[in-house]
Amino acid sequence: MCGRYSLDLSSSKSNFKLETIKEYSNIFEYSNENISPSLDAPIIINQNNNYEFIIAKWGLIFDWLPKGKTLFNIRSETVREKNFTRDIVDTQKCLIPFNHYFEWKKENDKNQKYKFYFKERPIAYFLGVFQKLNNNIFFSILTRQASKSGQKIHIRCPQIIAIKSQVKNWFKGEGDWLKESYYDINNEDLFELGLKYEKN
Image (cartoon, rainbow, N blue to C red; front, side, top):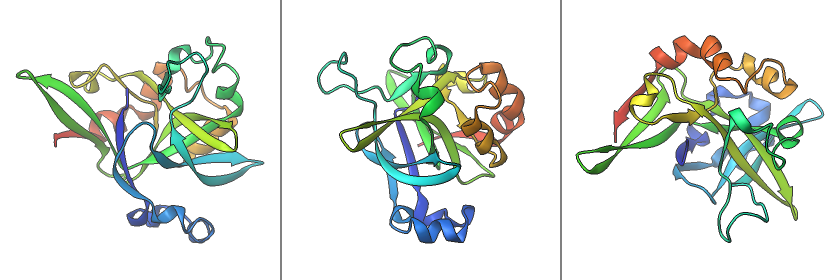
């Protein structure tokens, strides 16, 4: 799962085109070391083959959820089986930029916080979906079973894109992203060798 992450776009500008930074100058000032559900954060959507940066609130809203609750993670394995997400995973994909994400593991009767990140890639992207309600935009992060190394900390993890060339594939629906094996085949070296965790 993913319940906390960080993003400092103001220090990650070198990863984006100059024209993109100028067009979304306000968004590229965004910085938050502890993003949690219900908070606003930047996401990337694709409109008519153009990438747009927008600010959205973390957590989808549905009438059947208890009052005050949101759906901030969605299982990739069942996203197409649920009536409430079956359509949006095809029509309302998004990417959520991040620098690190955090998980907790019970150690000596205490919850130890761990930080996950790609050591050679300062910024990467969660796969996600978004919804529009009353002129507001909300998003949720797709998750999957963690790799063997990741399961030492938590059994699930976010679906992640770390290579820019994969961005177009995600938005075009090319590649079976919702199967665990696809992620492992395409990012195994990055995940196993590049992704480190530290006590924090």
